[in-house]
Image (cartoon, rainbow, N blue to C red; front, top):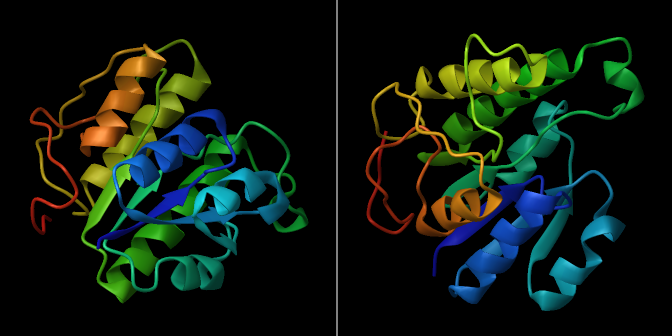
Length: 183
C-alpha cells in the first residue's frame, strides 16, 4: 500500500485531501505543528507526526518511508518564534526548500502542490503571486512530471478533485500517485 504524506492537513484543503486519500485506501501520514488539531484524522486512520516546514529535521522525519507527498501549506498567520519577522512567502519558500531537500534525502519522487486560489506571476495579490513563485520553485526542482505551465481553477471542488487524482496544479494530464515514479 502506498504511504502518502499530507503537509498542511490541519487546513481546510489539506484536511479534505487527507480524508480523500484515506477513502481511496492509501496509508496517510499527516504532519502538523499541533497534532491535536488533526485528532479527527488520527481517529480516521492517519498517522500523525509533529513537524514544521521551517525545520529541516522534522521534514526529514515526516518524509521517511513515504511514496509521495501533498503540500497544502498556505502561510497567512504568525508562525513559530524562529520565523518571527519573516514575510509569509519567506517562511513558505524556506519551508518548500526544506521539503524538497527532505524528499531528495528520502527518495520521495512525487510531490504535489495543492492550492485552490490559482497562481499568477502578475496578480495584484501578493498571496497569488507567492503561490506562483512556490509553483515555479517546485517545477524547477524536479519533484514531478509536467511542463512549467499554469493550470488553475479557483474552485475548491476542482482543486480537491485534482488532489484526489494526483493532478498537480501545474500539470496538464491527471495521474494517480500509484502510476509509477516520476521526476
